[in-house]
Image (cartoon, rainbow, N blue to C red):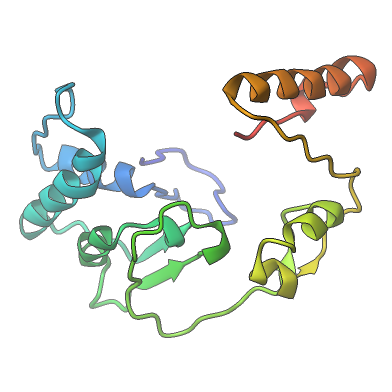
Length: 196
């Protein structure tokens, strides 16, 4: 995705080019007028993104001079091994391209033996800045990284665990919690986020 807006972005005075992997590949293919069967409903979307797009990107790279001086990969624990090859090819190697990789193995969704590229310097973050202290205490039971991290968020409200048996139970339990928050406690709807 290309942002053509002048002004400050991430503290910089030049326009920023931020892309998800899929957006980056799609943008390069579109720029080079490479046609993909994206609209064909018979094509498996997983195969499309995991196999076809990386291959199309490798095909187009010799025909384009477009390279990036810095690439940042967030949630790299879920990044497919096949995606690294074309991604590293769009990194501007001659100018000492910067590759930033951020991951948390305890948050891995896909366990398929992903391999990271060789990384010169690693840094473990010893702080949990994302959650309240009470959420952090609950998560510590399930994550070795959380046990090592220092919780830096606010105290937060008491954590409530609500078991359910099936999708219908999930909806019923979520409805009860939302009713309590929105009606009984009068929490503003814009202050409530439901993550499933």
